[in-house]
Image (cartoon, rainbow, N blue to C red; front, side, top):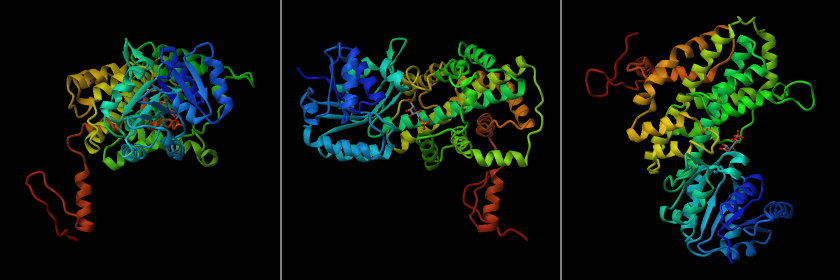
Length: 467
Ligand code: 6PG
């Protein structure tokens, strides 16, 4: 009897994913070089005859039904190429390899082309939701050959998270479409994490909220329009006591945020496309600034912080809620704007409404807001930006006042709010019919004869600037 699905890489994600496949009545076979991981899986899935694992590659590939469906959950980079090379001699034409890691999208294009020449279908497929998501239902973002996807579809639809019964997985497009969408998902993830962190800072410094109070505030927000996975876990984080001291764990954690690259790639590629995503960019920059801990401590001694004006709690909480909601909208708007342009540039033919739908559950950026976003794109698939969607106009107008007040307070009191600031500036700039960049064109022409265009007539102009 053959196994329906094969999984290579039995780390935490792989083990959880394979158990999820088995829970859904498919037979799944795992492979890993590490005996311990293989044994751990057999033990955990042991009482089911639907899960098994091996350290023998030929036993693994011979155990799978045709066409073979083999998912890799291994670290992005050279290991993916290595695993593919190891697998190739054991595969037959029409077999399917799915890369479930955060591979860089151009690597996926290269691998897809290479494997196509060998008759193998390759899917770059983002998987979001961490270990719990892999076990109970992740959001899955596959890209590759549309026909071959039909073989994978029943399994992915069964294991994916469900939003009101709808599976959070869809065929997204050819080539690296899936990895690209997952990359931008992570860019938005960085922005939302930065925003929730700076709002925490302003509430703590400006109104002296304790961890218990922060827990209450974020929990309450999570029941309203800010409902989202990141707000939910943030509320939980404030409750967590430290095992090593009497205090709360959050206060003991070093304020240096690490990164594995997906947020940075989102910003780099947005620059290549010429699409502004300043809320995401600054979220990457803030991880970089956070890493400069020693320099920051030193610089603080040069510019000691002055006392922060104290604000009434209720007032500041309302402003903070407005600013967070407003800025979340800007982060999604920028990420989706990037996706719309990447879709044209790389011929992905992305369906933004569908993407917002599969982000509604399972993934790290899942949020109530995504239901509105998918509706906005269903109503107007060619929408330039959700900012001009009728669904969003009133939501934005409603939160603008609070956002401005919060930002003004932060700026007057030396509390960095770069995510909120970039969101508000992005909004002001994107909604300005006339920007002062006519002056930049004048400067370029003045010092370097770079020419300019005019508002009132066609053509390209150059002026011999006087003096
Ligand atoms: C997800 C996450 C995940 C990512 C982590 C860590 O959707 O489940 O995006 O894929 O690896 O968030 O990313 P950083 O280490 O770069 O913060």
